[in-house]
Amino acid sequence: MKLCMIGTGYVGLVSGVCFSDLGNKVICTDVDKKKINKLNSGKIPIYEPGLEELVKKNFSQKRLSFTTDINSAIKNSDIIFICVGTPTQKKSNTANLKYVFQVANMISKNVNKYKVIVTKSTVPVTTGDKIEKIIRNRNKLNKFDVVSNPEFLREGEAIRDFVSPDRVVVGTKSKKANKIMKSLYLPIVKKDSRYFNISRRGAELVKYASNAFLATKISYINELANLCEKASVDIKDISIGMGLDQRIGERFLRAGPAYGGSCFPKDTRALVDTADKFKINLSIVKNVIKSNESRKDLLLKRIHRILGNNLKKKKITFLGVTFKPNTDDMREASSLKMISYLSSKGTFVSYHDPSGKKEVLDKIKNVKFHKNISSSCYKTDLIIIHTEWNEYKQLNFKKLVNKKKFKIYDLRNLYSPKKMLADKIDYFGIGR
Ligand SMILES: NC(=O)c1ccc[n+]([C@@H]2O[C@H](COP(=O)([O-])OP(=O)(O)OC[C@H]3O[C@@H](n4cnc5c(N)ncnc54)[C@H](O)[C@@H]3O)[C@@H](O)[C@H]2O)c1
Image (cartoon, rainbow, N blue to C red; front, side, top):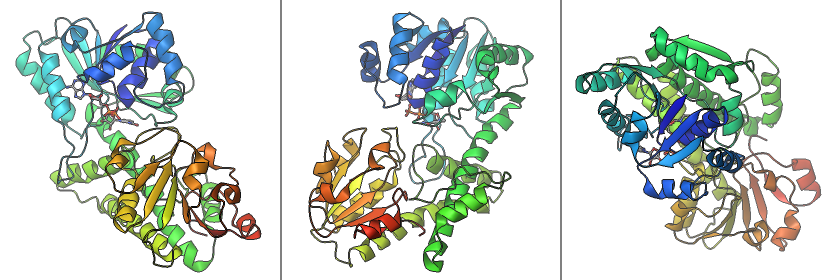
């Protein structure tokens, strides 16, 4: 099949490449010329394990191409995927659908034969109706269906998630469009995931409902971790004890910093905003958002305590700054608020991250990136293990820091408190 991805970001690039690997002809498009030029010269604009090899393979076999000529790409394709961003609008909780509607307008000018128009971007319920209206109003041919096919891949595991999804949700009442989507996903669905055809509005809402539920799970265990700290209980025991119940499940029950990333924060906000517009009060999700925001302050207070309320001129090292491992994505990472606060209090922040230097941190005073872990930790006062990269799981801190007194705040509970005590290292974890 001939496919066109509009928006070549984390979702558009990964899904486009994976579709091409399944034998489809895929054109990945974007308005960002730099990104397309990079891809055409064999460079991958994002950090995602396994992606480079897959891009190179399918590009050289001519199943995958990259262009900024979106009009021609739409004309020459049977299925058009909308994969542009849907960030939160400034000073509100509303999802900004500007890019989605721009794309809908573009599509409306280029429907020259029957096409399936698929929204992969995460959009509030009823957006598909609006996209359909835009195209129908402008295109006389009326040969198209608008389908919702939300994406559930996780950054860092994106390729595996895409080719082995738990489910493929396709929202459409059109038999023709559903048949096409089913045959597109057939090679993936064969491998025990479920193809789930529901209404378009249902598919739009399933995505938000899922993300808000996962965010709730994280906030729930994070709040319980606070109680564990006071009651001298190890949160790990609680997570395992709860997770063994199959009705609950063990995933997303690991206490840590506030959740971040490109999806949970904006999607929880957009969901409560949509519900408010329907005059429904999603009080649980509203409180999850509040709980997550206050978690950042709570951890900062803890850092104050750990350093004896004396932050000035202290050296603090962040091991990992991305919101999770195996990605370079800094969108709404909890490290952002933590680092800018610490810098404002006169600390010197060194950081290391396997995905490299971060532009967003360049603007903050007294913040320095280190290419290797040892130089970032050298003579530091406090190491904050922020992101659970494999690189940080077996470190010899005494050797790295090379100084008698230093402290560790392990936000991911990677190390054994007993072992740290035996090694005479001042060690603090989460919920322990
Ligand atoms: N990142 C994830 O892990 C993830 C997972 C599931 C769903 N989603 C959803 O998928 C959507 C895309 O997310 P992302 O992380 O890939 O975003 P992204 O910011 O990485 O990529 C979006 C791309 O769209 C391009 N773009 C913007 N306007 C355009 C236009 N008019 N025409 C062509 N290209 C245009 C941008 O230049 C950018 O490259 C969002 O709605 C997001 O919520 C993301």
